Image (cartoon, rainbow, N blue to C red; front, side, top):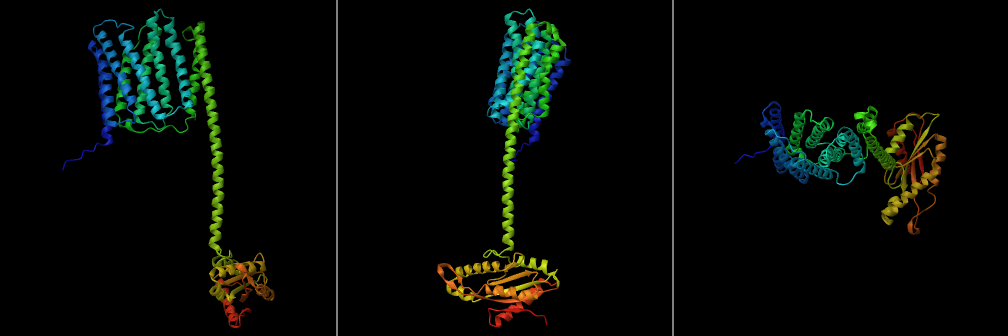
Length: 513
């Protein structure tokens, strides 16, 4: 039999990290090599990203391949532009600006933005205004920085129209990428390694762009050009690793409560709002003497403040909806607890009461006997009566069990009407009943028993107007000392037997030998 080759997740992760390690070696070679041929090395990484994305899509099967196809399509012109830039550097010639390379770079940024939008829609499925407001605040905050350090210096330069448009297009494209990226990061909940690698790609790309174009705008020369180039290479490398990592095929859940504003996010937004005033107060680049720049920054601050107010409104609405939800849940919980309490009462009642008559059953009678008889004294007497219906079997045999049940219910009703509230009436068998009378001494027990017997003098009227006469035999025991329930039941039962044998429809009182 052939061996089954099972590829473990660790081995699949290794592909992404090996790719990143190989790219890191290439970057180190670029930084330490002094030959002009090194300017062609940056071409290799974006070109490899195209193949890395293709391989990652085939191998890892992401939920949607469209964003990754757009990323691959963006890296292709990026690699071509790097090749053009590298060839000019190898031949020690000045790179035309603006030129074909710039058009290719800007085209790549448009495709990057399209890929990020598609990726964000894959995770959000629908529009969430709170997330877009947060992304707008982040973008405007960095937009103020971009205006102060990149766009405004370009506008003050002596560039002609076309070079100026291209120069300004780069930071604008970066802000578009930042907006979509912020929306994506503020939407996803638990971020996968692939999403984190994509985040690193964008952050490094934007940082490298900011360093390069910021120094170009303010000094006219790209300071630390190799650092920016290394940053672009690292960013491309992270994108390729993101596609190769198996987590690109994992489903990414949305963030819980997208309208919420965690404390960390709120702190970042407040810090971004303060960027504009700090720039004005610090008079960066003599900005206070430039009315146009002041007007733009104030306008951006006003827009940013408006977005923050709208965000707070969303937050207030979210808090209100959560409060309503909490009250609703509390109402349902209270109703559920009441239902549970009622159910427990019903179950407890069913466990201690006869289902037919509703009287106490033998278990509840035993509990009452244990509670009362252990405290009996001459000053705190009690009495136990055992009742057995006379003629009940004939009713069952002649009229049927339904009529017998009806008779038992009527008997329970009469017994309950003749006893006191503190007394216990129990059904302990088919037609056997028991009465526990508290505070009844031997003298009062006879009157108590006669009252029970008198309750059977009238006939019982059943359904369909049938009249049935049933009597009862009673065995009674007076208790004036601590006694066990078994002893009291035994003595009352002996007295009941004597009442039955003596002719029924009478009461017999137990007398100790």
